[in-house]
Length: 144
Image (tube, rainbow, N blue to C red):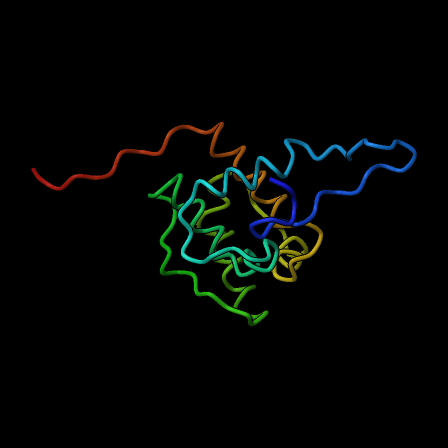
């Protein structure tokens, strides 16, 4: 699939002076998009950065892979910058820290604004943490 499809941004530009060479992007954002595509999200993705800017879809992605880690009722979809900041602050304090993927104020601002491929960069770190960390604990069962 080409960049720009299914809410994906266009591929990164070629490096200057090296026709056909693409900038080194770590594991590559295509892997991030494919990883996110495994998750049945509650919203259809249209513009990746904007769709992930309020933190709700990031919470859904984490919940899919680590169900015990996230309470989705803590996050509300929003276009408001203040509400987006609140969502990210709660997600950072309650979930991301436990994954070892703490984010700072400047990164939260980029996520809220949908700039600098902040969502892709964060999801890349979350994916690495989830894949390298211990498996989630089994669900608790009631009983004596």
